[in-house]
Structures are given as structure tokens and as C-alpha cells.
Image (cartoon, rainbow, N blue to C red; front, side, top):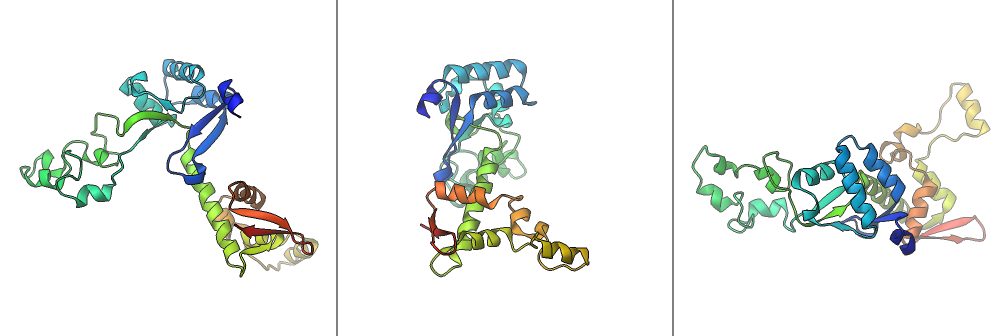
Length: 256
């Protein structure tokens, strides 16, 4: 894998704040296709960014000086760059007078001294953006340090994956010893939907119904039809579960 990354065939991307899901891999040709097809980037910026990635195949970071602020903002908006955020939270900003905003206009102490009705009385221009929101008044790019290379929509995908893993583990934890036959765990994941065997088809032909419609199960409402086998493999690969041979009822699944 390291050799393929050095040769520029695969790109490794760091995803901050995702625990075990902190790194992603993507084929370089697929990433370049995404950049070329992005409607949010100008043609010259696409070429410049692609050239930088080709010249630095193993780089996880991009220096801030590499792109002018308008280009950097465009890449961030398109999802190809991310920027680190300060370690303090929005809750800390408004609950710690004096040092709350590290000296910015959003601290309670500075607001209390501002003239009533002035811009400073509500935190100043771009206060929402400075506090971690999306206010349009801020003129500088938020965050500190170098930019990180990213893949658009990675956060949403990893959030869905982490949620699915947690749900599968919760289904397994309902058993006494946190282990189940794989077939039974699959039934729980599918939500007990109506079977598709000959008997079920006959009941449907007679207008009878017994079971749950697939669209009403968590598998479809929350996880968009994610296959049991796929999420099971993800949990096994992440070291959360192990699959073993029971010797009597097929394969079993056990939480680690």
C-alpha cells in the first residue's frame, strides 16, 4: 500500500476526529476525476490543484501559502481541502468571560463595554463565523495551521458507517453473552421483514400480510438499505466483532 501511494496510484487522506475511521484511501484517478467534474472550481484552479497533488503523492497537508485565499476558499467549499478548528468550543466561547474568544470581539467582557445598538454589541462583524458557525461576514479563512487534503462527502459517509456499526453492536449486545448465530443477527438487522419464500408469496397473492414493510425498518429509514454482510465485514475489520464456527448452527458472531 505504501508503495502504491508513493507511485501515485492511491491517495491516503486523513479524516480528523473519527477515531478508528481516521484514514481513507482513494484511487488517484478517481480523485482527479472528481476534481475535474467539480462545478464549484474554475478550470485553472483544477489544473493547479491536480498538479500539486501529483507532485506530492504522499502529502496529507497543503501549506496555506500554496493557494491564495480565494482559491483556498473555493477548494474548501468544494470539499477538497479542510482546515483545523480551534480546540475550544462554542459553549466555552459564551460561558467564559474575558478569555472566551482568545481576544476576539465575541467575548462577553468586550461586548458589555460596547455601545448599545452598535455592531460591536453583538460580537462584531463575522461573529457567528468566528464562533464556529457559517456567518458570511468573516473575511479570513477560519482555523489554524496547514490545510488537509479531503474527499467530498467523506464526513457524511463515515458518520453513516459509524452509526451502522454502533447499531449492529447494540443488536448483538441484547443477547446474554453478546454472541449470536449469524443468521439470527441478520434477521435483527433486516428488521424482521416479511420473508420472500413460497409461503409468503402465496399469502401476498391472497391479500394477506404478516410482517413489517421494508421501508419501515431502521435498515432502510436510517441506513438506506445497507447490506448486513457489508457492515458485518466492516465491524470485523475494525476489530469490533469476530466470526466463528459454532459447529451446530453455522457461523456465529461475537463482540470483542
